[in-house]
Length: 170
Ligand code: AMP
Image 1 (cartoon, rainbow, N blue to C red):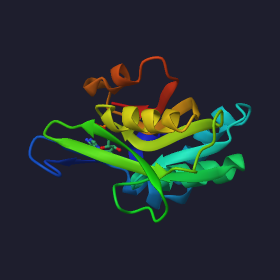
Image 2: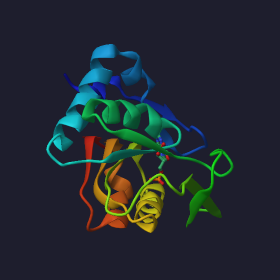
Image 3: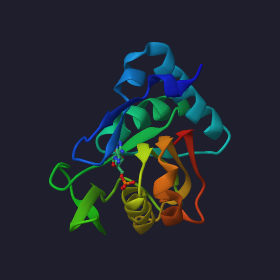
């Protein structure tokens, strides 16, 4: 099965010049969705993962079933103001301005082995901030998994020293 058959290019979304990789056709297809989740989970079955961390919002769709498959819990990393309990946060720079992500301060205990999951690696700015957030709480980042890596944006340069992989590369 070629998962790339289920990724749709949307030119000029959300703004001119961006080719948006639309993953919804993959999620709509039960078999393709299952294959993508199974392939990610298989790589971590023997890695003693304690928790899967998913990044709002598309990272939840990938991360939650991976956690279920591995038989471990799921931690949502969210945009500011969404999580109800006490949070810890991390800001990071975007092309213009900054962005912030949050996690519950008791979500991760020191030395827990964490798998971070998101739909797509672009510049790696978001993923690098999630690594910092996990490590701030004492978690150990065992790996980072994406469905898609836009390799021409060199996101991996922001994630040097970490175990990063993606099911599809462009
Ligand atoms: P970045 O921090 O640059 O790695 O961007 C991360 C997030 O932006 C990913 O989780 C994607 O959801 C979204 N994103 C960025 N560029 C694209 C794109 N070309 N197609 C689809 N999603 C994108």
